[in-house]
Image 1 (tube, one colour):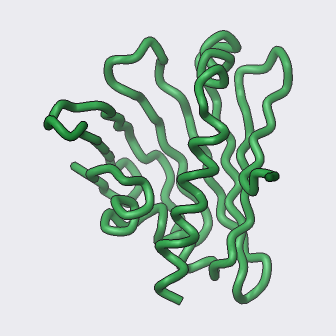
Image 2 (image 1 turned 180 degrees about the horizontal axis):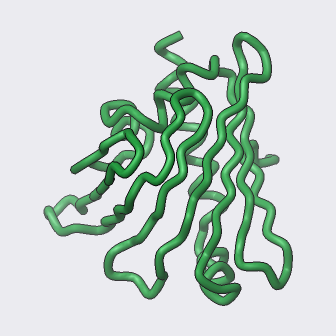
Length: 155
């Protein structure tokens, strides 16, 4: 089965792009990336903080069934243009991966469909390549499928 979310990583570069078209209007797609309640539903993580504004910060956390922190990430939002663009840093706690920069742009395709284009820049080629060794592509596809399912109910 072909994955709907496409990850493009050129050999020897420290960045990658992620693209996905959704059967969602642009307004709903943007809300899925900027409203804590929706993020928690499709990502399956707790939003500890989300200041959806320029110079705002964010922090997400997921715990295992025993209550131990399994995933924690956060960063700073550098640009927030409603319906168009979110630029933020992303850093996972307790991993060897450094800070990455994410530029996420939202595009209207039709009245009922929209597209997300993410440009992710890592500190080094080696860091990007280590991330790609993880089930990164499958994970982002799963999350985007869940996003479309959860947010699609709001149409």
